[in-house]
Image (cartoon, rainbow, N blue to C red; front, side, top):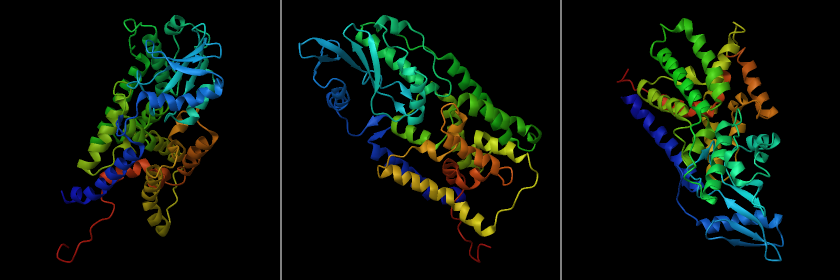
Length: 394
């Protein structure tokens, strides 16, 4: 009980910092503190289209809720269909992903224009490179609604958000909402079920560590393959930030949310690490790397003492940068996106490989000294500063 009380101040400070992030962004779980009108949001976004149509006028059609682009002769040159606010309940990895569907004068899709969003820039760039955003170009509305476009492996949540948002907005525009149906993403559903099963296996290992010692390697293998390379959806600082600001789609990510729930509850009440030791795919990858060499180098005591607090300083520094409004791509400060190697930069892959190689000679160096996500769970597990016992207590 005393240990739990000692952890309380640091947990409250952590919650305060996370709350300040939400306040600085003006949103908490998708709820806006300062709501701007749809018209003002569209007016800001129209600056993008004034560059594309410098001599045109823009007028809102009250019936279709589209923005008409009118040329000098008074003809409608194009129509702009904003996905917001119609698609605010459809979330990508970083929350809502607003964009504009541009229809030409023949009412065929000319292009999709992304607006300000919180998705990882590297993923969006990768999706552009393979032509994902051009899938609907030159299609009529009916053709676009009927076209089956597969979500992109490694970027399933983001690509599925765009597909659903496009179908929703076109259905509203063409007055076909009766035909619109939010389809069940069966591949994603099966992946989530697989993640939950792997989580249950990890929980058994956590509850019965002695009995499951001989099959611990299987747990780590499943973590790497299922949670790492197949689901590619890990708990990270970027996940925490996106969840606090935009909320999360329970149906699309119930596997990851189940992991989060146990990873928060178990350390608080058992004072034992769960996620870092039993679930994290990158920790499991370091485990296998460590098996390559039996001999491990011991850390210098002075260096180890300094490094023991480094990840907390690292975490605090990143949180403060976000709070003061610095644009920080959190995915670049953790190696987890290396599992989506087809969308990862050379820097991230190299970043991950360095720690995997170091794990051959040192015991899980990333987990022990550098991981800011692990620092959050460690704050839930044990007091950062232990109370010194006086003579009467000894």
